[in-house]
Length: 67
Picture 1 (cartoon, rainbow, N blue to C red):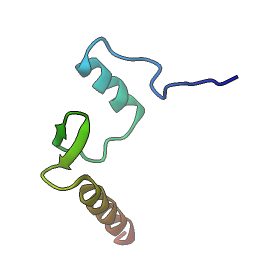
Picture 2: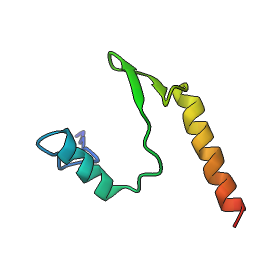
Picture 3: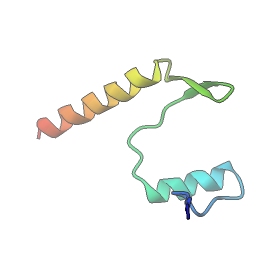
């Protein structure tokens, strides 16, 4: 038997309520302005998605080592 579950069993009635649920479940490190073409993520804050995430991870690692 296969069982599929969603990591967010509760959903809001609209996008704003759903954002609040997610923000209560996770710590938001940084918010990006996302650009999509259809359902494909094209950029985050004007950068390719992989570069934006790698830059964020690099900054996070620098903060850890500077303490």
